[in-house]
Length: 284
Image (cartoon, rainbow, N blue to C red; front, side, top):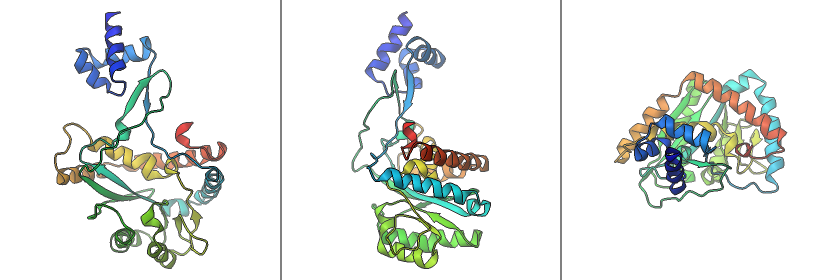
């Protein structure tokens, strides 16, 4: 009973701490702390997901995307040539590492994470196919602009993709740099009918990417969480060059088996989102 009370009080003070930290604080084996949390206190470790609230018109857009993309993925050639892409910010402080955060509670909590402003950071781009991760690419700019993004596409990403395959379909979300008119003009010229993203009526996109849908893109539901889980391991990086090297190493550990599982997960998410009338997958 004394052990149970000690664990209860520990997690009442700080519900989001790890079992490892609690074990050190209490002087108890991790297995004992875990057993008390799950068996005696009946608590569960909830992973926080940062999602934008869907607006009324988003549901139908997500349903349409899921239905159309599922149909395209039935074609093995399309599946093998689909490229997901995205940028992520890595702070030196490690404070914005949502994938490492657990809240121990009896019910799923509604919690907010504090964002640390002005922390030194790296803006990173990666692209993911069924067989390969392209990147990481590190932007020199503190803020990724449409001009910097277009330069990366022209000088870095497209030469690699064109060396690997004769044709490909590039997915991007609706971030401001992707919406830049010069970026869309470039994609219309180089990939007419071969890109997915936020687009205007006269754009030559294959599919429209629905807003507020990180739960449907490989980079968001897999890659960035996987990389951050390996980058933000104590002791944290002390300099940006050290952080950059950790990111490079983490990306290289993505295996073919992982990518196979990710593509299976993608299909599952599309099916689930369609069946759930466009709801966020992370809420189900």
